[in-house]
Structure formats: C-alpha cells, structure tokens
Length: 561
Image 1 (spheres, rainbow, N blue to C red):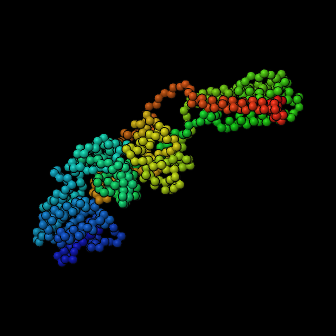
Image 2 (cartoon, one colour; image 1 turned 30 degrees about the horizontal axis):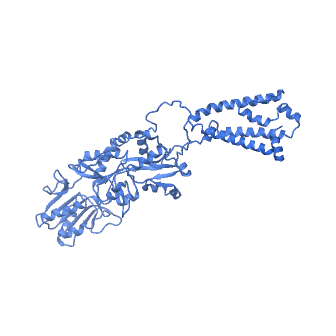
Image 3 (cartoon, helix red, strand yellow; image 1 turned 120 degrees about the vertical axis):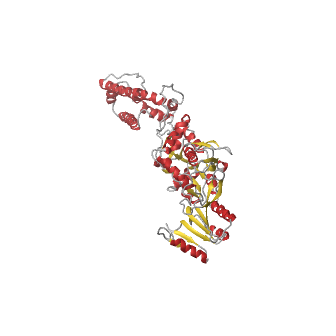
C-alpha cells in the first residue's frame, strides 16, 4: 500500500522527509502532499508539523472518506511541550485514531510517544507513553484485546429471540439473552468490557435511517450516544450511508408468517365429503333424468306406463323422494319399471351411506381452506402485508403491492404481538414479514397462542450484523472475536436454543372424538330452512293456482304424468 507524506514548506522538514524516504526498509510507493488519482482512503501516513497550531489545522482534514480510521499514522512535531503532547493525543483520541505515534524533535533530542485509551485506572482517556526503545515493533497498537472492565454502551431493544433484556439498571452490568444477546455477552467477556444497555427513545425500535433526522436505534448510533447496536439488524444501503456495518454474524431468511386458510362456510362443510367433480356428475345426473321425464310428458300413456308403472302420477317427485330415502305410495307392477326403481334406490342408498359416513367426520373437523403458502400466491391474493417500516425495500419490484401494506407500529416486542395475532387467528386477512427465527421462537415458546406457519419459499436472504457509528475503531476489534465465535460453531448453537426449527408442535396431543356443536351442523339448519322456504313457495303457488287457470295447467304439467 502507498505511503502518504505531508509536510509544510520548511527547509528542516524537507531534510527530515529525505531521511525518512532513504531509510525505508521496503520498496514502497510514496506520495508527497497530493492524493493519488483513483486512490481514496489512505492507510499509512507520515505528517510533519512545525507546532501544535499547524497540527490542529492538519487534523481538521482527517475525514473518514480520506483516511482509514484503523490506519497507521505518524505525526512529527518540530517542537512541542509536554502539555502540547497531551493535547495532541486528546485530539487524536477524539478522532478514534488508535494506531498513532508522535515524534517530537525539539532540536537534537527527539522523543517518541504513543498512547493507550484504556487501562486499570482510566476508561476512554488517553494515557501517553514515552517509548524508550525506538526500534521496538510495538510502537503501534495492533489489537485492542482488553478494555479493563470499562463500560461500552450497547443500543438495542426487546426483540426475542434476538435480544431479551433481563436487566438494564444504570450503574450496574446489564443482563440480556437471546442469541444476539449471547453473542454480545460473550464479546464482553472475551474483551473484558462492561455492558451498558440503552434503548431507543420512545421505544422506536429500529427507526428510520436518514442523513438528517434518523429515528430510533439509528439515531442513537448516528449521534454516537451508543458504541454499537444489535437487534435483528439486516444490512441496508440506507443504514450503510450513515453507519458502519460489522461482519455478518448470522444469515437468516426473510419470509412471511401466514394465517390458517379461511374457515369453511356451513354450506361448504356440507359439500366437503364429495369433490367438485362428483357433485357436478350427481347434479348433471338429476338434471338429465328430470329432462328425460319432461320429454316423456309428450309420449303416449303406454310408454309412460311401461317406464313408470301404471297409476304413477308423481314420477318427477318420486325421483327426488327416493334421493331423500322417502317411501313410495304406489309401487310399479311391471318388471322393467321395478328394475329401474330398484337400481335408482340402490344407487341413492350407496351415495347416501358414503356421504353420511364422511359428513360426520368433516362436521367435527375445524378445518379450513389450504393456506396461501408461497410468495407468488400471496401477491396474487388479497391478503394484507403487515411489515416494519424499513421493509419497504422488499416491495420495490412491484409498487402496486404497497396499497396492501399495513405498518406495524413500533413498541415493545411489536413483531411478537403481530405474530400472536396471526397464530391466534385474530388476524386472518394478512401476513407478517419476519425472519425464520421469529417463527421458530414462537413455535417453541408461545405455542399456547397458536401454531405459526410460514411460506415455503423465502423472500430474500437476511444477513445480520452489528452496526457502529461511522467513526469508531470497534469494528475491527469485535469482528476478529466474532470470526472466532463463528468458527467454533457457537452462533448456530445459540440460535437453535431459542427456536423450534422442526416446524411441528413440541407436543403432539392425541385427537379425541368430540360431540357435534351448533357451529358444526349450522349448514344442515340452513339447508332445511331453504327447503322449507321452497315448500312454502310451492304451497303458495298451489293456492294461487285455484284462481289462475294457466298456473294450474303449468303445475299439473310438471307434477302429474
């Protein structure tokens, strides 16, 4: 990587720059003053300043876009007092530049200094060290392995199974669990820092990221109120603009928690024993026979007697009477008519027996239509989308779906409350966009509120990270430990502790027979009411036919031979 050298236009500084370049141990590209074209962020730099005043002017140019915060930087002051040395390191610490060395020339007596921000007696205050051995390889802090029990502020909120806050008392160690809570607690133990939990103001949860005016957790991270934040934080371009993401510590999937299918109506329950094709065949059969009987109205009496039997004046009504297992007042005497009647009785008897046997089981079953369990199926349906405000990005491919979006109001475990509403069937017309871990946690710890189903396919991958303020050195420090945790398999172990990933209830209870209730036989009551209404209508027509001659002829045509 190239080395940046910046100096003032002083003769003695030019001589020092020449000596530095001549004594480089390895061949390296050296850039004087100006920035290389196409090279944006510097990692190595040597800066020459005449005094503290010129140093402060130089340090104002240390922007994150131009200088890597974890780079190696050497500042050379031609002259500086002991108090000014302390002032230099106070300024450097405000910029969170850890790997920094200061050389004070002071004539022929150069002195070398570095600093450490944490110690047994101080937390977040630079302790200046004078380096006696100039050839030491430990001039720069390579890794910050010990915070000496100093507090670090964690921004998070209640969001099981990711974070569950057990205690967050001021002045005491905060206790959290959840698999991201376990991760943070392990980091605190490995790096020896004290965890102080801070929640977003007004319980705004994740909040909305914005360069000016973020809310929720994004706000307290952006203004550096906290040192880092966790809580089901997926990588987002809008967040990356104002914050710094760490290493992805877990990859989940974004999918929908879906409601059970719509319950069958009372009439649909009566139709369930047979499939639609069977019902179409049966109805077609009755219509065909009825049509044939109407055609026989125009045949001779001999033909009708041969088919119906002599004296049978109500053949059309007898057709439906046999369907309902009713008795016949006149039994045909001819063998052909008897054979037709017996075959029709046997046919209807078999159908009724099969239907009644299946109907009893289906009436007891609290079954519903098959749920919509694919992402494409949900798009084609009329279901509403219950989502967090930050999930709008998943609908950019089809903005028309935004009309069906319902935002979940922020609050304490608001996602869990939305899932409870779906599981308990209080919400049947919507789906909830969550991660796989939300559903697995519900099916293990909240199964009494109802079993949750998810879509068979996922909407997108969902890598989770720890977010940090833009200017912080913690990213490299924590990433190194997180990498070791992932290698050891601890992350997957913690995740499995908090969820049921078999997507079956933890305990399968034996199904016991139960008596029929009113809701089970409501369809029967509706059907008999329809038949009674038809009977009353026919009776009314019969009464009216005594006064209307043409109506009497029509009824006689349909009812009698």
